[in-house]
Amino acid sequence: GGRHAGLLGVEPARPRRALLSDTWLRVLVVGLGCAWLCTSLWLAWSLRRDPAGAASLRRSHEMTELSNEVLILRRQLASMVSDADEAAASGAGGTEPPPPPTDALGHADPAADTASRHPEFRLAMIVPWLGAELPRWFDLFVASCAGSAYLVDWLIFHEDAPIDVAAAPANVRYISLGPHGMGAHFGVQLARLTGEPNQTHTLVRLLQHAFATWPYAIVEYKPTYGDVFRDYLDGYTHWSYTDLDLVAGDLTAFVSRAELVELDILTFTFGDAVTHGRLYLRGQFAMHRLSAATSRLWLACEFLSASGGSGGGAGGGGGSGGLLHELRIKHARATRAQQRGEAFRPHFNSAEGCYSRVVATSPTLRVKYANRMIADFTSAPQVYVLLSGGGRRAAVRMCAGSEGDGTAGGLVGSPMRPTASSSAPASQRAACDPFAPPPPPPRASLLGNQRPVGALIPLVTHTNCSEWVEPRYRVCADVSGAWASELGADGAANGWNFFYLAGRWYRQRFTASHPAGLIEGALFHFQVWKRAYKRQGPQLAPIPPPGESAAFVLTKEGYRPLALRPAGGSSTGAGTGAYEYDEALASIDARLKAIERDGDHQPG
Image (cartoon, rainbow, N blue to C red; front, side, top):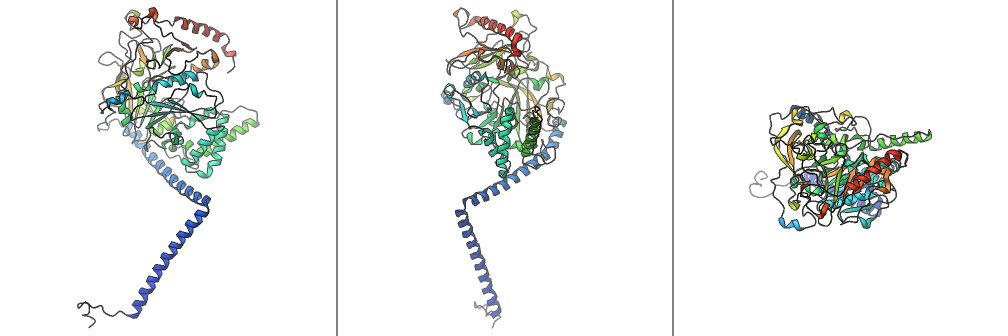
């Protein structure tokens, strides 16, 4: 009967012991479910009554996630360094190089050319300023920012500095963080970003002391700006750190749409990449795409990492250092020096070192080092700055063929033809007209001012350059070959740009468009000349209100206005370049004699 009950569709009788076992199992399952439900309800009720406890729990969870993220990042970068170095030393390795950014991308809607802002891209140039007084050339810097309004905003963070906000161009934003606010902001953000929220108070206190004692210390944290000031970057596609000891031309004419779309980082050099092989991110312009690929790369640098970090990335040196450890050491040494009555200036870590190395050993990044900047190290004796306004475009330029114009290194793709070189007779050189109209901007299409010539060529690197950088951080191009100075097929010194793509290094020729007789740059960096500018103070030329066109000539002695009216009242000049700036130059010569006489005795 029992054996055939199942075949007939009737359940066989079950033993009593089995029934009791099933009952207890059901009771156990129901009991565990009730216990889980009661625990969840009690926890929710407790957290609702104790917001501080809830916040602490969330912070603990966030800290754990960030710490794991930092650990993974360091391990990845540590494994990349040796592979990247081997790839750079071995050249192409039999593989085809990845394509560089191309100018063949589809252009934006031509109707967008009539807009005052680019319809797709926006670049934030970030400048934190510490100090109660602004640089004496600050008005010139701010006025030059207006020339890039189509693409660029300048975000200037400060601590209640005496700034005339009403006199600023529309694309210059001033953000006051209040007294001692810079250290507070960096401390809170870096504690969060390094996964150490429990060290927020200590970091705030140490950073406030460092910024108040050594304002220059802010440069150590340039790589962090994109993350530290992330809350201010909504609506931007790219960001860059920068400085105040420069004037800007029209950056819109020097950044291409292809670079904005395809590159992770674009930095501008001033010719020393070719002449000295220096491959590092310049502090004046290092444009980052606002993306996960470039976020928090700086955590691989030991002096910016979490406390107790191994620094396993390209910037690591072992040990139990970290951001907090670095700040404590500086504070302790400063305290001892003060007790002894001694002066103390700590060592600062520059973005030109560790961070540049981290970027150059991250094979997933696409990075370009482009010759587009003028610097007083290699510039001509006079640099001309045209401020935008009245229908005139902004420009930063110098005369081609003059001594020190940087053409030997192909600076900004100078058109160094035999008729424009310094060795040619003056009668054969193109006239240097400071007011020559610049090429019209491509606006929304953003074609840039450079064109590639030829294919990418593998580049070998080494570490024997940039002596101010620690050897472990140096990245140098091997420029010992004849290619570094040879002319192109048309007799022009086309210049070279450098790329880091898919973990390999390349060089590529380029040509650039400049008005006849001139060399233009996106920026002019006056790191040396500013020493004289600091001494001259109010005797520097006044700057007109925003929207008014003006022109200035900058030399190592100072800057003076140029008359916008051409000689004879003509606006063409007929190629003579005869403009009325002799009087301004004479004034500079007089000032030079005064500086040589008593400049070293003036305060400041």
